[in-house]
Image (tube, rainbow, N blue to C red):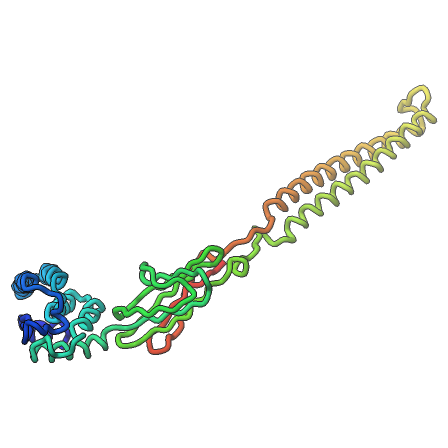
Length: 326
């Protein structure tokens, strides 16, 4: 039988037992006036009517207003009944502890027995998250709500299922841990953040050798072009000298060395063209290599993509830690 069906089957309007002696009130009635008791009783009865109509949220509101006037265990127990119907088991358990604070004395026998039954059932339907951390300044949240600022430890009862722990601190990589908490079990988590300086990784667009090969090849080509240009210049100088020596008045096709001189001139021009092309290629490659070196300079990156690592937890359940991947 579920908690909700049990609650409906055993529902009894919780009356407010009066104190045996007016001059010796029980601890749950100390400081409460007769007028406050009457006001609380009216709100309790209004809540009971709503509960029987299955208007649990509205009934809960009436019970809360009543308990704000008089924190009587019987009113607390009706709050428990509403919270169970609304599937808010953790809040129900918290209020049940308050309802049982004084034992059976403030409750009718049937109601007290019902409360003890709920206590056992809720104990098996609520888990616990116990978090410890030693790094000063780390802030931890559980399901988006502040839990603890480290160093410290904190335990929080939670409903069974998935829960999320997030630890943050300036200069550290945030850590998110997805918890799978089982009913009646405790999940122990010891959280430690990794400093950004340790988590960072230097990356490049391309392997570092590629820009250097392009840059070095460009410098080599430019140098080769320069050497070829010097050779071509030397050949032009030799051609000019031969023309001056053999054809002081100008060469014609009738001169015996005309063909040889023309070949020298053609070879010098060809070599000069090759030298210019090689030098131009080298200059372009050198410039490209310099740009690639600039673009490929190292930069530090931190984890952004996340992947889960499932870790069994002591007492039951598991933790899915989201770690960084570069």
